[in-house]
Length: 483
Image 1 (cartoon, rainbow, N blue to C red):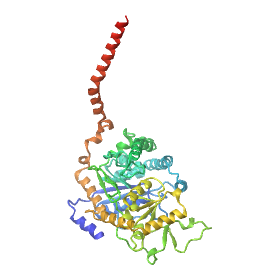
Image 2: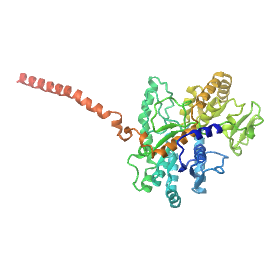
Image 3: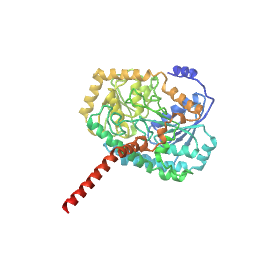
Image 4: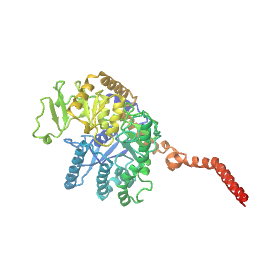
């Protein structure tokens, strides 16, 4: 894969002179893994890259955010031990709630409240902000899941590319053509084949989506008001989204439902996928060993570990899935996990817990990659029978192989695809030429509601006037007859 990547890199034209690029990672976990890969690839391409990384996030246990030797530069930011300890404790409690099936909008808004608080402290760090402003970056690549990234880019006065770590239906206001008849709305847990009730549910969720977005933005509005010279953007999160020069999505049509795209969107799913290196922990395993990433210190003392059960704090998932004896992947349904399962053609058993994981598993199940169990429905019998089905039914492995071929046969690897688009934006001075005029139109004009109203007045106006005239005349005639 590395040789192919550099072969494409040498053939890619035109080659851009070194640009100064800032990448922003304020959440960590899988978001960091993606932005680390992006930053490293841009550095390898010859650009001067710096990542702004917020430390102390509790998403990956046993993983070190040390960066890569001889690669991009890094500026780290930290909120302090006390806050991080409290935040990690809250986050751990949320995971317990997710396992009990208690994922809801209130929990998500509480999470966004923490992110907003962190954002306020970061933007108030004059030393860090001044340093980033004086660097005068050519472009910023930000984590589009976090609204703070957009506020930061505005404060720095730098054009930005939005990288979204999930699927196309995540951002609610980038104005992609999304007919509700066959494109599922975020959190609807629907496939692209809906019956009449499914379409009714999807329509209902499409009305709720802007409300949810406004609730998310409400947790950041005061932060933007305090830290931006122009104040909070009048258009809120929608205005920030539509200010991006380009949107890059961590998805791929091997898993994504087909739908219309816009010139300012590019799919780069699979950035973490690559040929596996045999990890030391699995070099001599037999076919029946089960490996779980888990903090071994948290294992209940009263439970014995089975002889074929191994716990590790951290293991590169790509290398584990690429092992020749990997038969099944039990996953929470994260987007990176599923894309790596596709790449290595390993069927999945999904146990989604929160956020986009439920929608992700609907896609995986619809495509035939695996099956899903709701965490509240898990029993020993259900788990055992589902595992046996996935291992013994050859259709799942066959489908996984087919999806893997689709994913790998794209003419340009995802890493180079993103690099070329970033350089295109830099070459052309921005992404204005990619944006349709509709982005500047109000929503009622975009959906022709003003025209519908005008036609209604033109066509129905004479009818209403005639009916009113006739009714008035009949009323006068009746009045004359009475008298």
